[in-house]
Length: 217
Image (cartoon, rainbow, N blue to C red; front, side, top):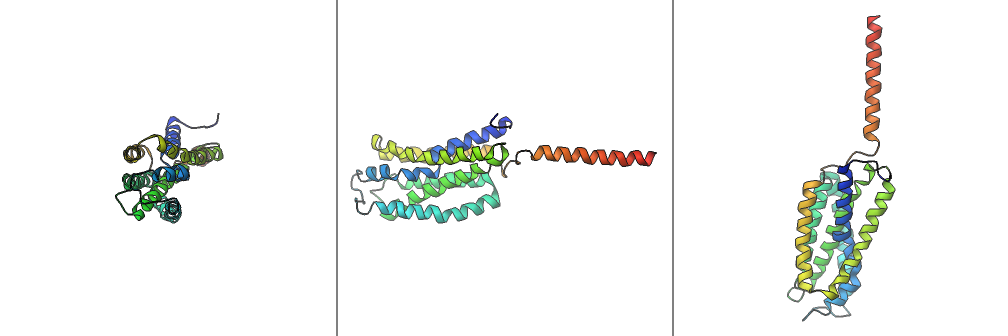
């Protein structure tokens, strides 16, 4: 079997994979499709010359913001990390609903929040990997799901810009509710930890019983 775990761990992994693929920071890697679509928005503030700035600024927001994300994960656990990340991502999508009515800097900020919030979704899910026997395989699956998120923006040319980002904002809020109700406040125990604790307890009882027997004799 790939995983030696109960349904609880499998459920966490399933939710982690889905949220990482559909709501992870990998979305920003689909920037070419995003850039082509935002140039088609009526009265867009971007041209082919300055549209790359969205990715540059957004990527830096994601990269430097992950330092704070790491602290959140260490201090508060995967639940807070994932929920706050999804809410940040929802805000990012909302900021992109009407790029023609806001300053260019707001669009860059929104793009960066999508990346930052989505990265928090990934790192929260990665804490579940050690709970499985083949944790490297689980980590690889989550990383692949993260990268696959880059395909999401390829939908943009075939759908209304406003509808896409409004839907995704609501979708991320729904994801925050789901992870908030399922994710633990601390990472699950590492694989084999419960077995080792059980064995140590058995040995302790055996030692105690042996001492008791000596006293009787």
